[in-house]
Image (cartoon, rainbow over all chains, first blue to last red; front, side, top):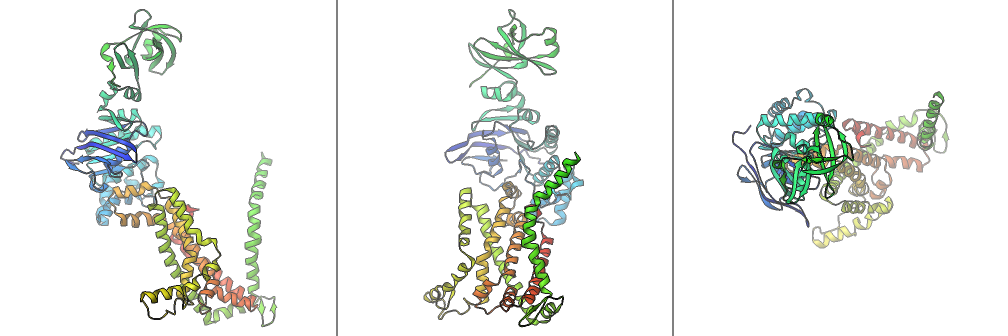
Length: 328
Length: 287
């Protein structure tokens, strides 16, 4: 929608509520036109960050730049951002069409023009047939599309999504996330999506920002963040990793990069504590010296060719290049 | 199974019966009584059970009836305008500008303080304030706004409306406040995100979503004002009349059939007004 690349940048952005610091001087340069997920547990500051970008929360310190201008003190509608709210926040007294056309009405666009534009937007989200319905006559997925259309009609440079999929059932969530991804590619604008689900972030994002305790723990392309966590928190929050203390420091290693062999052939000896069949894989938990738990995710055919049971002594091995040293 | 279902029906009836019997005895029966009496015949010194239309004929034949009904509507309309304006403003302030729940509750209770005394005491307390040598007049004179006491402050339509507004504004505040508290705050953020300014948010979001509350408050105020007689008597110094006073005068003269007929017509009028109001707004969501 926009020919020029629109960069969103956070410069030492801080949010304080009284004495508590919700967001502590974070810096980040969003890649133009990319899908970025702000990921973290509840209370980590990800929602405050998004709301500050949107302008629904004042910035205590630092600035937010969009396309080279400081937008920190502008009202929400003047920033070039649009927000999609967690519970969609559709106006219950307005029809779908009027909800979508709301911002145009506020701008004073005449009735015919705003209706035709709203229809275009509804076409984009495939809801033309429901234009005259009221929000409470729509399903969760349909409400979400209305919210999307309403946000997009302002032609934002960046769309901000606050946990957009959390109100949907698991099946719909997976469908809507592929739609979101497709829409972002079609529109070619930046999406910033707040979530606490790492699977959602991995499925959607070009870049992931993992936040914890008001700071960014790690940020980068989704694959890098998952593959090479820098801190214990990221390794544990992203899941699928073991955190092991070895003589030369703490390391993260993906559970599927841990191999199982006989007790004397491995790098380290272990005792099986639990075996869990997961369909395509078998998750084998074991205990190594120092009372550390290590999980190995073994393909099911490999496992059943040579099954192990709780109490068995086994050897674990891995490729040193799969070990990622943790800084914290 | 069959037995259980019968028991369920029986249980249902038993459960509604206390309320139903209370309503039957204290609401339905008296109204039926009034309807019956309104058809009786009355002379200066006796009341004769009958079925005659003469009470209604007299009522509709008298020009006084129309003047008084019109006056009653006038009071209701003007009171409604003021209570809606004040009630909406107070509720808006409480719901959207007072941030903490503690303060909301505290200020809300403050609004109810006048209700700790009776209506009549609240009315009478206006008299020393508004009277010819009352506080209002002496203050205005000492400020030099006026040279001699203003006569229309007390015992006038002004005083009647002032008292009505004072008495019944809270009945507007409560339902409006209640409806406003249920408005999802994210709707206001969403409106702001879409570029709406304060006035636009008020006009396009808050007022439409508050309509059911305004309507419930309107029903309260309109029915209270239309059924009132004591406020009009006190505050107008018996110089103005409304339907309630018509009825109370009839009762004072022991003209029960005539009073009943007027009461029935008033009841029908009020029900019609409410019926019309309900056509505009669906209040069911609030109940």
